[in-house]
Image 1 (cartoon, rainbow, N blue to C red):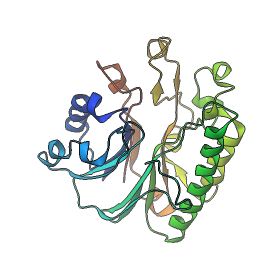
Image 2: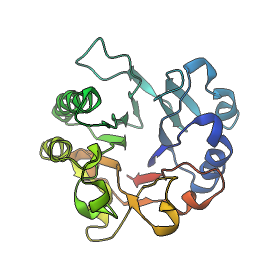
Image 3: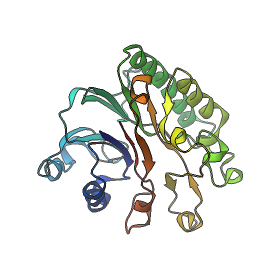
Image 4: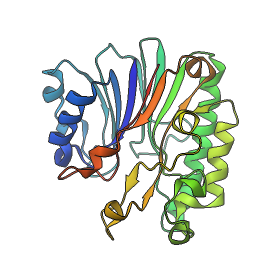
Length: 254
């Protein structure tokens, strides 16, 4: 089974590119982030007509996550537990093929200091608790998405330019490490321990042409999922297409 994560930066703007990639890459399950639409405006019929099961957790104009699957999706849960007042659509979970998949879009956190960075860290605390609960099931689990964290300076093309950014702050990285330390395997870095890899290139400043990227899209595997890992990768070439997302897909084969 091939599971992928793709921040598409707006389903309306990227639909042609997304359909092309789905046809070429042939994933079995995809978690989408930043769909930027309410559930009712998601073009689900376009995907259902092509054989996909669709589950969404949308939000008008911002955020939003969705799952596309060739296999049945069970026990769908929308939202991250721990704060009933949080109205931002950033998490959707489902069980597919015996694997529990969480599609995540973590808060950016900029500018900092300020309420957005505070929200980022509190959201990561809640995710830490949810990740621990999922691990306790001893089932194969995948936490997939745009984490908005560069784990180390090796995941940043220009650390000097990102020193004051929320994605690279010690607090953000420490929160990511605390989740990893529970016993998760970071699929991409495990597969390519020393490679220079990015999953995001800003639209500004010629970042793509200069390869000034960031690695912020991650796949974390529970021990039962990590035992099944066959391959993992990044579909970098997608970023070069016309009207591409600023992110590219990351995937793992179990």
